[in-house]
Image (cartoon, rainbow, N blue to C red; front, side, top):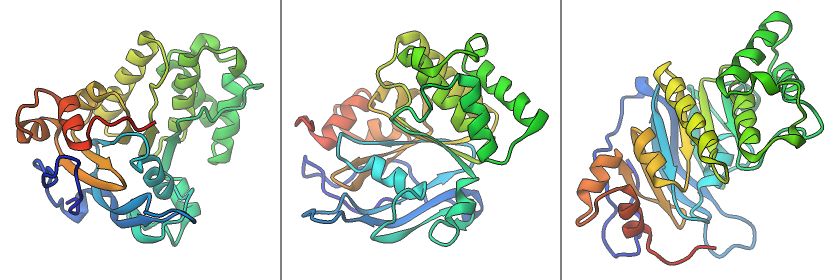
Length: 271
């Protein structure tokens, strides 16, 4: 359950139909997470508390500066929290970060590929880091290239790819080692409609195959279509959590998730 937080409208946080799931069904548990950057007046993350269930797509939403990327960075052991805890696949992130990194895949906002290498060379390199080799690695490379629609461009350098192709290759690298949990930080930002559609269809395919996905996006229609549950962050806190439908229903006068999001986080620009 999310902790209490302040919303711009002065209302209490919307809690929707979020429940406290049984521990046996949780694959990710974030508890009372706080991150205070040096020199900052307020925490970037201020008591964030949520759980993600096995086999679901969980949306972590919020305006610029809400703390989403900081939360993901802590979960993925790229940052240390000021306080609080993260448990992923029953592993405490603070105790065995190296072990944890083999359990998840991450597609960050920035393209995390070597531009001078081909798509296939990139996947071979990242696969070897995860301990894949030989026929297993070669098979996974071709499977992942096929999934993201790049089978015919595997021998092409990344720096010649369009933005959409780079995003798709980024996704292929994140799923190469068949991770238990997949973290996607705005995977469709700045790409054409065709690439965006393919990525969304791929995520539905992964979900239907049992993958667990934590998804951040500024496109509320994506979250409404993909996510079984979402948590909306603002100013470092979770201000709402539940299914998109329940959050919309609980917010008077709102017809969709985007209207609910703006009601809860306000219309002030966050550049």
